[in-house]
Picture 1 (tube, helix red, strand yellow):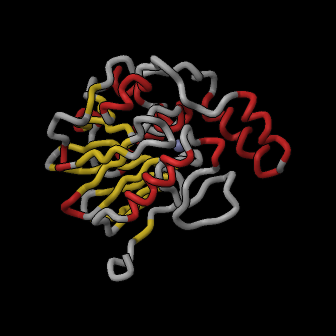
Picture 2 (picture 1 turned 45 degrees about the vertical axis):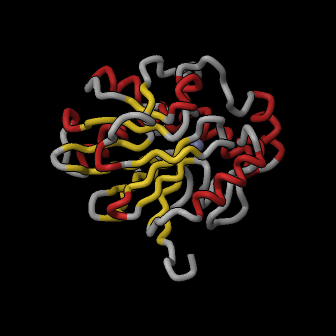
Length: 235
Ligand SMILES: [Zn+2]
């Protein structure tokens, strides 16, 4: 786990090939995403390392309900009982009324390259038998005032209900998997969409990435890859 402060109130944590973020507001702290199941201990530890106790976690915001973004939520809810929000369109996915996720067959196809084999091994370790996590108690982020003024931005494509979040006061954009800056299966770094095998609807994914590039952001915090500062003049 690596923790990096990217603005006054935002710390970004790099876990197992995935990021989550901690947004401070007043005495509370809000998590944006929650790592793989195997990252659970680190998610709890990261709250303490940025100076908060567990009972100061006021909410968890979920960009989308893939296993690498919701892993610590069952433990967090058990220990803290804070509310969990995601975009209204992602709610049925988080409740597992349907599943839009890379299939075991598609994962097997990744074994043909060294890069893919490494990623599959790391992913299986990080999931550790928790394939069936769901969030039946999830709430819609669309009609509530979220902590720290965080604003949901519907960004469909990677999943139908994928939701980014903007922290307007500090210009921090949490893009989740709608716009990333790297991934173990990608050969390049910098702003990009994920490899097509991960996206439910490729055309929508491209449209959402464009929408995010036009947000008033100074810092982009992606679900995968390092955070980047945006050059406002060229944006
Ligand atoms: Zn992801």
